[in-house]
Each structure stands twice: as C-alpha cells, then as structure tokens.
Image (cartoon, rainbow, N blue to C red; front, top):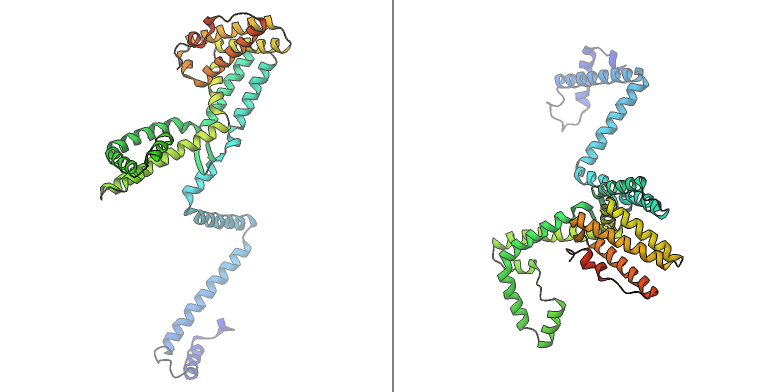
Amino acid sequence: MFFTIPRRDRHQQSNNLAGLLPAKVTDELVHPSRLLYTEEIVLSVCMVLTGLLYTFAQMPGTVVNTARSGVALVQKSVAGFGSLHTKNKSEDAVPLMVAARPMFDAISTATDLERRNHFGSTTAAAWEAVSKSIKETAFTTVATHNKMLPLWMLEIEQERAGALEEQLSSLLGKHREVLKEIRLQEMTPEQREVAAEGGSLDIPWRVVASILPEPQQTAAMKLCRVYEEAQENIECIEKSRRIVNYDYWVAIAKVANTPEGLEARSASQHAMRALKIGDLEVARGAYEKSLACWQNAFASYPQFQSETVLVREVAKLIDEYKNVLSLLDQPFDEAYELHHLAPLAG
C-alpha cells in the first residue's frame, strides 16, 4: 500500500524514478528532495479527503439536506445577481386584467344591489368598497403594452411631459419655427394647405435638436428622450385605463359615495324601470327627481362639475327625460338644462 511505504524506501524509489524519466527533464525536477516533498503533499491531501468523506457519510440526513439547500441558494443568488433589478420589476408587475379583477368584483357587487333596488347603507358600503378597490388597482404595477406602470401615474406623467415641453419650447422653439419656414417654402400651395389641415408641419423636437452644434445637441437630445419617454408612458397608461373603463368607474364611485349621488342613481333606476313597463308618468317624475338630486350633488360638491364622465351621465339623463316628455306631448322645462344643473361644467 502507498500509505505504508517507509520514507527511506520512497527515497530510493525517487532515485530509481529519476533514471526512468526522459533525458529532457532537468535535474532539478527529478531531485529526490523535490519528489519527496511532492509525495508528502499528495499524502496529506489524500488523508484530509478521506477524513472528510468519512465524516460526511456519518452526518444525519438533515445536515446533508441543509448543506445542499445552502449550495442551491448560493447558486440561485449568483445566477440572478446580474439581472436582479429587472427580475424584481417583472415579479412585481401583474397583467392588467388580473390587477383589475378585485375592482370588477366590487363594482359587480354594488351595481347588483342597485339593480335589485337596494340603495340603503349596504349599497353605500358597497360603493365605498369600490373606491377602495379602485385605489388598490391604481397602485398596482401593471405589465401591459411593453411597459410596467401603475395607473395612478397618468397625471404625474402628464405634468412631467408638460414641463418638459415648456423647456424644449424655450430651448428649441425658434429653431423649430425656422425649420417650419424652410419646409413651407419647399411645398406647393396645395401641399401647404393639406399640411396645415393635417398638422404635419409640427416638426418633432428630436429633429430640431439634431441641427444644434455640440455640446448643445447632446443636452437637447437627452431632454428629447426624457420627453418621449413621458409621452410613451402617458399613451400606455391611457390605453390601460380605457380597457378597464377606469376613469368612468372612478367618477361613478365618487358620486355614489355621497347621499345626493346615491339618491340620484336611485331615482334614475326607478325611471328606467317605469319606462320599461310603459309607465310614462312615473318615469317622468322619477327623471325629474333624479335631475334635481344631480343638481344638489353638483352644488354640494362643485368638483363634480369638472368630471367629464359625470357631466355626460347627466346629459344622457336629460336626453332620456326629453324623450319621455315627447311621448307625453309635454314641454321641456329649461330649468333642467345642463347649464342650470351644472353651471361650472365646461
């Protein structure tokens, strides 16, 4: 056995080995002391490995499993270290319809109560739950249209884009006008007319920035990229909001969370049910009550008059009311005109 060879014998083997090596091997490499030192190192390593293998074999299964789990964790951490930032973003973002599902469920609960003619405290609580679920949806990072953005960021991005456009206009406005004049001079009268109608004379800021000398061009290009990013974010969030009808339900939940608004919705539901069974007189009275409640809501909460969704809802209600009056051959009272109900509406 290798481990039982005495050191003297191994010294002798080293001398014999030197004679068997090719002549090209130097004397230094086959020196007996060097070979002896190398053998001792190999022997030490083998003994250590043997001891470790024996110890590892005697370990309990839980210790071994823990060690394996630790190795797997390190391997996973190292593998994900390079793309950690992107990976976290992807894991935090969810598909749009998944994010909006709690909102849809809450809306379904509230509108179902209204369809069953329940407009008491239970329905008020249901609309309060709708408002809460809308906020949760708004603050959820949504993965859609190649972007990962929360729906609440629309107004922030609109403000940012507006401020950036003011900076670009101040920096590049004069250059843009010069380029417009050059483009107009190159067009025929017919082309100028078509371009003016279609708005194709609006030269992109990036094109204007490209004519600047350095270092102004680099600075302007950076500003253009930030502005374009804000515009892309706005477009993406607006698409997502339209898909889930976000703005509509935000406005409806606001008004339905007020006593005046809930009463207005109750009266309009009553009007529609009466109209469906052909009871025009009851429908007329219910529409008038609903419009009066809307007027109270607009007076109590003037901010509602700036909500386009709510103004459109009332305008639609007025049209339905006029239709009932025409069926009854009765005149329309101008007190129910929109500008009387919501004088601050644009």
